[in-house]
Length: 395
Image (cartoon, rainbow, N blue to C red; front, side, top):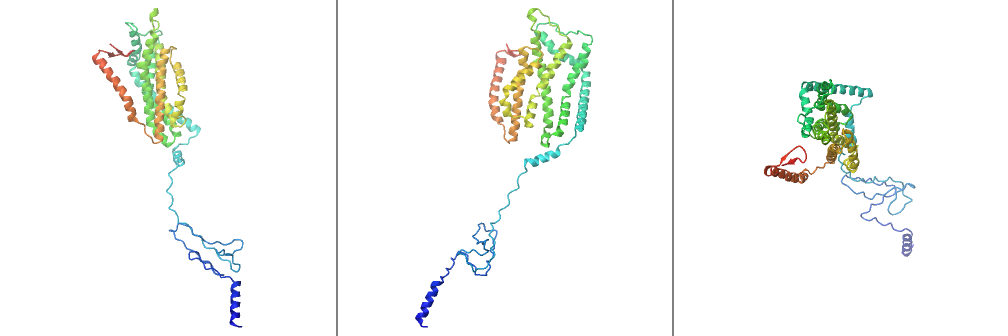
């Protein structure tokens, strides 16, 4: 064969078999037939996933970037590159469920009979404390009577009677009043901290652990409000109310003759009623503590609360006159808003917020300072003096 024929056959062979292009420098090189693709190792510092070829699941052949090669043998897929592991997240704070679980562990589980036994025990202890206070009050029974009949003496003196005294209608009245009713009333106020403690001790096993820290404030505030209510009734409500009632018939020639039994019954009803009414802020606070009510709800429905308070004052008031009704209703309405303010402070404490005491002190302190200065000038320079009846400032 001549050289020209060899060149022609070589050129024809080149036309039949196209040349295979070489891979780019940055692209992975396709493996030869029968050659296994090498595994690519990764390090934790790698953060991006690089391109990795895959295996065709239907044919089982290596899928290279240059097309399907039917003569190639099945190959294993290279392990995919994995992102570097991120640092573990910080541990989550304990949830309310776990806190509730801890509180549940502190709660006492008692059966119905155990509750009855606990109630019996607390009642016996409360009555024992009440009995001790009654024995102490019995020693000062006569002094107590002189103290308790003083509002009647004040009322009759204000009405112009020179020898103000109460009347004994029945033979047993003096004994039952001086040595039974009055020492019992006094013992209730003396033993009120112990009684409220027994109430708390009976209720506390059913409360959460975080709620039991209110034991001391509950006992002190409840007993304090009860005693303050009794003092308010003695020095203000009962004293002025009795003066108004006994003075109604003065201008129509009616001589007031009050028996000691009726006077004592009226005194006990008013003193205990007002003392219990002064527990209204504690009731509102605990309704908020147990999430039964909220300050927003109490404020939005305050008009209904005022209506209920007026009806309750009408029931407590021994007479139907407007004067005594107002004297009882106004403090009760003020106590309602005091309890609402206490519940608002509780909500602020839950939300980790503070009440602006400094601003409120400035807003309220300036008018009080001006009023005090005016009273001082009126008393020292113009000869006025304070009295316990309206208008409270006379010359």
